[in-house]
Image 1 (cartoon, rainbow, N blue to C red):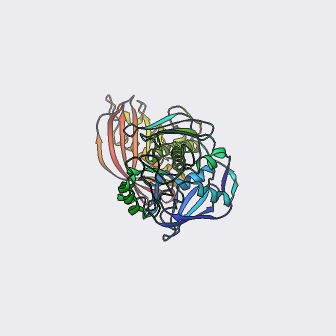
Image 2: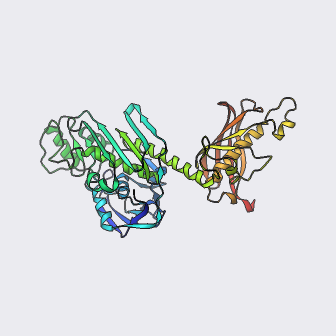
Image 3: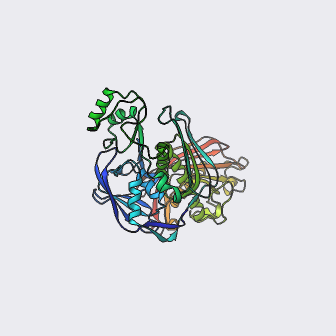
Length: 468
């Protein structure tokens, strides 16, 4: 894989009709600086809002991948992203004058050609990779979807589809090298759908920009004169169509014997670009679509954020069984003995959820008076431990945690379910529920041996430490 970050040399544009919205649009690709990533800009909206191409911003998955931040949306981004990722471009601005990029001929090749016409330029910075170190699997049994991700020293895709249709049947493909195969062997593969889906998609208000020269339409129902008349009306067709019992509508010739599955691999590449970093791993997918692709991308992006998190704070490198030890915790939260009540961070989904542990020993100073002869951890300190875990979660989300403090402003729904005694290990799970400006709402639960010991909903404010 390419080792240096890459952008384009000059502005280039593609114009056409959006597949689902039917809007006429133009997308301009512009060079971007190191570490800026892929960004969509809605130049037609006030303030020119930007949407980073990250899975966090996926808003819809109906026959395509839609990104949104607030009222700013971009529909059907997967083809644009696949073209960018296939050429191993890291930093680029995709400026749109409407809500959806052009579908062009239904493949990503027109985008690839324009980007190559612009010229590719290496930048003075190394690429950051996410390396898959352990295999994992994703499955949707009801839809017979499976994706397995395994370690690999390169990015690879193996894809399988099997439809009960003579024109399609079982198809398989494998993309082994982006550099050697993507442009000629995968980029030209066009999107496809079944004839039985066309009418329903029209009823749903999608494929408004669909045309027979922008997709492969596979016959899976009687295609007689009545069906031809219906298609003519829906798509305002002037070309002649002949009744068929199987195959493809019109006189379309496939570009590859397995063109549909190659396009599915391209869609997967585009959706995986939303991880936000190139991946070294092998993706083996069976019957996958955008929803499953994005679910896997979310899982991998979470893994990447954890890796960044551990590298940022861990003083002792990777250790089995926990993310951060006590030395790393002390780097973030201000609490010290005798009021530091978390010992380790064992899992974290940055800006969303944290899991910490507190080992409760007889040496805790509060056991001297609570209660002599019958030591029980005060409930208020269990809640304090939850609050500290929540504070860790909030402070970690900031670029400058040592300059901030978390003040807890209120507690609701506090319940104590069982006593906590010396020798117990508290597992503290805190989830960020809501953020409004500098005010946050968190939900925390404390467990001992898998049983709920205490829970609370907490409100907190983030303040400057030097103004506190």
